[in-house]
Image 1 (cartoon, rainbow, N blue to C red):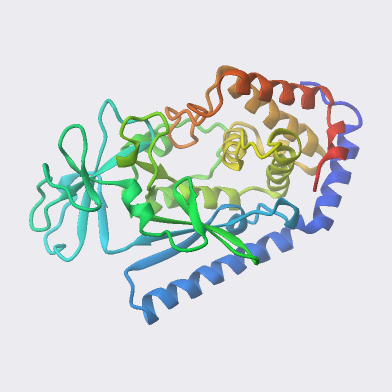
Image 2 (cartoon, rainbow, N blue to C red; image 1 turned 135 degrees about the vertical axis):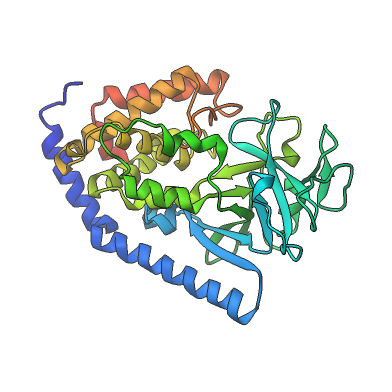
Length: 367
């Protein structure tokens, strides 16, 4: 793909402007460290003072420092219960855990990629529970006793709150926050095993040491099912938020600015009239794939516009084939049930129009 002559100069000017608007490396890491401190303080408060079996983690735009005041990003917070254990294999069950509630991740031919059910395990033995239900445990189509995702979400709702996907949205005059009550498994999910074991990485991104760290973080399970599933109220989505946060922290300065610019483009040209066709997560996924499959030397300040174009072209190719593969579980199509019919054509035309302009749309972005 040929790059117009003015791209280099415009890229350098854009880089300088973004640095001046709060996206410099110094401010980026100040924000990251601030949210890490907030997270530490909140965990100390919950665990040491309140004595709760709860761990608090902050993710998303604020914790990753991939936002500006103009993007009006929410705070994304996940609380997961340390009193509940999630296993992948009954062989890893250990005696002496009768004080904790244990679940086994189960999936079959009817479970969409990227999702699982959580089947209850007896407290005193590695035996799966069937034909039992209560307020939170429900029976699925195979009479397995599984933890209902909707029942867990309802426990969070209070005044000034409403559901937003798997989250409970808290809002007032000062801020809004999406709070998710989830579970954590320290085991790396089988569905994503190829990500660290057999994936070819020609350009050594992410580095091997980061891959090993991400594997040890395991995965989160958030209470939301697939929108097209017949049993979505019983399904839990696998979330790799720990790993994603580490990967965004590994973005170099140009990759970081490219990702934030994609969010500006999304808000200015694509998601208009209150419609959220594409999310920041789609653009983040696009960035992960592109950074993994391009040399680090490409991601230089004088190539910023060219890199933005590459991201838009990759996303356009996904829109045209109606398949946005999850970065950790490519079998999961994140467009399924979301981008279809006239919406698919509408977004494709917008993306094509942006690419035809060859960077000139930059002057019309709402920063």
